[in-house]
Amino acid sequence: MNAPLLAKVGVTFLQLSLLAVGGANAVIPEVRRAVVVRYHWMSDETFTHLFAIAQSAPGPNVMIVSLVGWRLVGLAGLLVATIAMLGPSCLLAFGVGRVWSRWSHAPVVGMLQQVLAPIAVGLIAASGLILARAADASIAAGTVTALVAAFVLFTKRSPMWALAAAAIGAIMLRRMGMPF
Amino acid sequence: MTPATPLTRLTFFLAFLKIGMFGFGGVAPWARRVLVEERRWLTDEEFAALMGIGQILPGANVVNASVILGDRYFGPVGSLLAFGGIMGAPLVVLIGIVSVYDRFETLPDVQAALAGMAAAGCGMVIGTGLKMAAGLRRDVLTIALGLGALVPVLLKAPLLLIVLVLAPIGLGIKWRKRAR
Image (cartoon, rainbow over all chains, first blue to last red):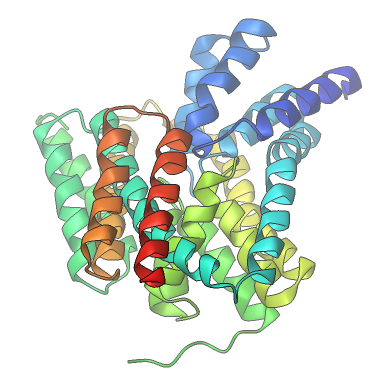
């Protein structure tokens, strides 16, 4: 195992951890800059490839970092990269959560909850639209996005069905020679 | 209405295992589905506020929210359970995908299925945003804050700035209303 490289991977992601304001997707350009441009650990093509794998896997999108670690130093790299990237931000969240619950009976915290809730909802809806703008390359794909949104909004069935139907539908469309 | 699932360390861990395992294209939709709809541990407003804190802090939004919720229910052990659940299973799946991805990614059916699931994932996020909006209170301030967060994000304004502007304004208006 390459211990110096492992240490460098750890330090790099430790530094990025507290910069990831706005979630994992916000920090991906920074991760790319460190991994591809600054340290030349991999080509841009490989990074894009790993990004595609992370997107197609379940779990938080931050796992692109785990994949980079895996690619560079194997299992130890995966663990070190993941913990370095998430450790500091999780500790901060833990601390803020403690303060939050200590003050939970103060009226200002109740108000803050009522204020933060709609902001969070707006941000989530916006992130969905931004993702769709990047991912939906055809009218068919846009239609699938709209149908799944309606499915989630209007039914209580598991979205797993919608995911499966979308995958099968896309395969059938492509097999018929239609763009997706 | 089905009753809430009893909250124990085991059911809590299993809930986060499910959120991580099924979270294709992001874990926020599944977090809401499991915590609010299925297990009924949180109301829509509580969940949205928790996500709001998770979004403001650096790091992965849902991971931050999980750590805070875990500590609220079971202390530091709860944080570790939530973290292990949401990250553990997807990391194992990710390693599995990496080892077969190179062999399968060029298959047209696999590419089509991934494109279909990506489009569906966007729809899940948008649908979840709309569903969360439906669960919030219906006053002018709430709607204004939601749209006030949504529109600037679409115009690529930095997320932290949006929250730092909107939250004090919202809080100020709430505070004045209460003082009256």
